Length: 135
Image 1 (spheres, rainbow, N blue to C red):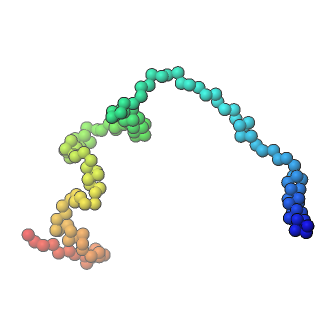
Image 2 (image 1 turned 180 degrees about the vertical axis):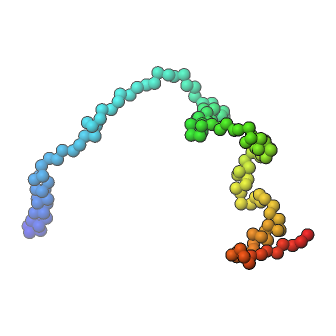
């Protein structure tokens, strides 16, 4: 009897705590804003994609995004166009930036003289010197 009383008293006390608080109101998230009715779009002229074909809309979207961000190609002055033509912009390989960024690509042949100058010890400018081989 005593064991039953030890188990029963805490259970009644805990139940009483919940009863004293009363009923709490909870918020209704659907009462805050009214849901918009579902609408079926009236345009059914879209065709399903065909397997194995390339979608042109993705490229169009990318082109539109680039033009919106950067405004398309900038007009060049006559002198700038001449400098670019002299530098050979029409002979540049496609993807050259990826090739140049590759650590295994040797972009410029520095030669022995340039490598000797780069490897020279740092000085204050008054006593700095580098010996280059005479050819």
